Length: 109
Length: 90
Image 1 (tube, one colour):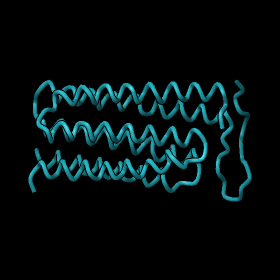
Image 2 (tube, helix red, strand yellow):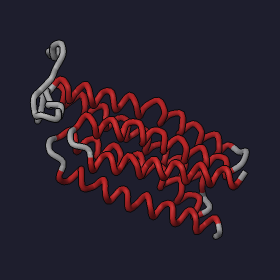
Image 3 (cartoon, rainbow over the protein chains, first blue to last red):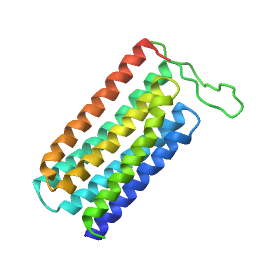
């Protein structure tokens, strides 16, 4: 059980590392959001799951699992809201040749 | 390697990652890059708080702090996104 918990925590930390590298290295706002929105959610979920396993059966473990569920719901919601706000205030997406490709129309306020 | 050492090393790695994310908060072009930097730092701080609870042997106290931190992180991100959506900041 301890081995499994430690493995989960290590994998979670690896996902945090991946999301940080994406945040630092990607070229524009949308791709950075793509890296951090998923990597952070999964990293937090796996780390908290491992910590709850390590703690054993108790009320504290239930609270840790509650935090994991909370993060699993709210982190994609926050990502979505932030992306919508950036799209509405016309942050330009990055393309390879510098031209803007945008299908459809920007939703006006 | 004892379990406490593992917690210590893990939280140190997460702290270094927080410092790396701070680069995006300070230098990131525009408001939204800074906002995602802050959001990522909040999520990492959540895990660091639980790890500190395990290190001190008082998990049941630090869990509540971590829960409040998760709530605050969510509310800050949502409200800042709504605010900058309305004003259209660059």
